[in-house]
Length: 113
Image 1 (cartoon, rainbow, N blue to C red):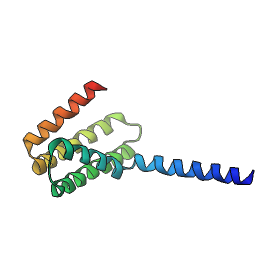
Image 2: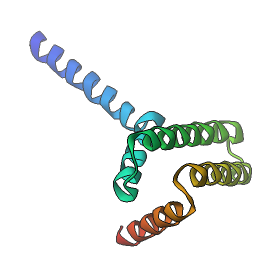
Image 3: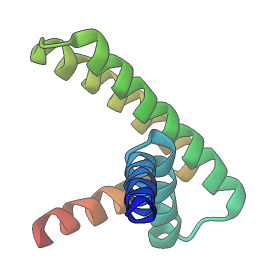
Image 4: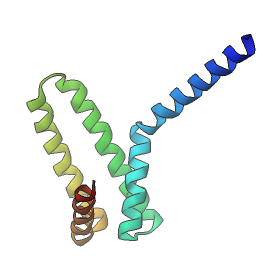
């Protein structure tokens, strides 16, 4: 009985740990950067720059949400500023044409869901 209890506790801890990593900014940035690399076909050096921009974007959004608290308008305003900066940085790294191509890809995927 004790062994069964220990196995259940271990499984619960493992499942919880993996669940938290999935929502971490690093995991989200990696997933989005890899998808961008697949869609836009850029090299590993560009991937690292894109990953850094994505990670910075996600961390800034998380901080903005924490600072805004229940104030949805403040968060919305901060998010717009963060997105504008991210788009500017992304355009410098991947180019305006690739940024347009990426936005079109995202728009098409939203329609599918």
